[in-house]
Image (cartoon, rainbow, N blue to C red; front, side, top):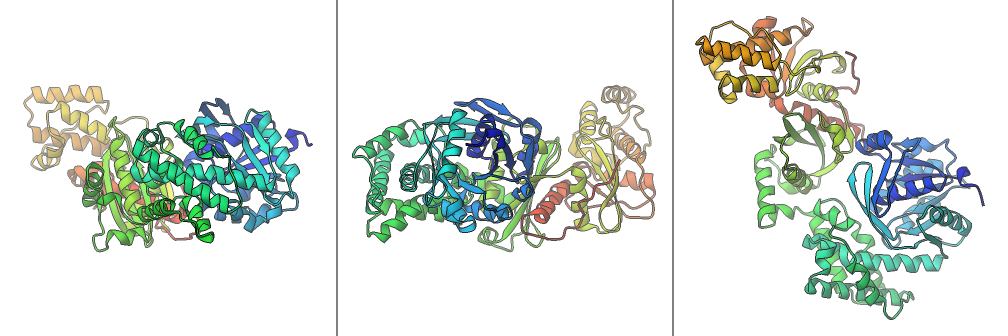
Length: 615
């Protein structure tokens, strides 16, 4: 047996299973590399490591963290553990083929019947191990898993018994770190995979279709009867395959499932969020083998087809009751492209951009041609996160989102997108959608002001930010307007009626409020006060250099709701500044376009390059 420190293991996919295996192999003394293509998750893991809570508690940092498994080409990997959904495995395996050599062993640490054949197709049966895991967890943050249970042992076996020594070695390493794992032969690993799949198939689709947690499903006599019958069908099919379980197996299964917590199984979570599911390797495989042996599998067939129908169609928007109504209202308000049916967007690639600003969160969906098809915004500061979940659910239910990008102040704490980008890059990409070539971009946001200079190729050349103070920003404007007792939505109209040229001397919000109180005591009209506030902000912007001789455009929430700012800035800079269409959504649009550009397997052009200048 080799020393643990001489063994190199790559873990591909950092969901709960991948995180737990990576931590335990690290604790066993192995050199462990992490592979994860979600940039948000990757960034958090690089900073804080992996954290396990509850049943297993640990916090571990890793030296080798990769976005792509191909980055390990020179790392001399001994084992690659694939802890991915079955529908992601073929692509990841193909990418990892560059690492294939005589000494490499690959491990399928996934649920379902015959999922290991996906890897065997690429690497060969003689190099493939199958692992049946008997632990589970829920992701509570991009780098943290709450381990909900571990019912030892796990099982690990070579699928054709040619790599039994490797199975024993890996099982020993996991067991040495407290994750009890038993090495078994090829016949036993098949039996254990059927056993685990029958358990998963009995509860997962039911919870997804019925929107029930495991505990809720097991506490209802009607659903318990269904669960028992689904298990019985699986046992009958397994028997036809010469896989036999103890006489009390069904009773053992029901007792095991009774321990299920008040949370959704993985397949149910995917179904509820309208993501692809692994139903073909769960109930679908039981149906497939049932047909082979002429064994009726009516309930497994029903749930297989229901899950597929709910995945392929926009069911949620047609569900009666609160969820369906909320979904419908979001669509009615946010849908831009009304020339196509909703079914069209479910069958064509779409890309999501989210701008998590200090005041508002903006969502933009574009199609595969770069056309805007949906946009929506919600307040960012609300303590109720349900609104954000509702919008994300509506988007996931009605658009085939193949890649997504987050930007803005909250981007690093938002783990639900594939990549993150800075507001600078996204602003340039979004503005270049409307105005190509050299340009200045003025973005007055809730907490900062940015001036971005793009070159002739739409690349960011330089940018300036006043990110040290909120002076002159949307939050400043709102606070001083409140002190002046002027409704923010009426400010622009009032200012247009004034010819007064006074301005605030101070950009400190506290002192500015005092000045405004003096204006009020002096009897200044609300229209003059409004104009004075705008002039003050324009003076702040004018101190940030704009290159002459090229177009200047404005984006952001302030110009969207305060059009008089354009009038003041035109006079201040002695040029005609353009306000882009729907300026509050420009940064989110840019994020969507960057998601489109960065989606795996695509090489689509975008209006702005991914080159960021220096301050």
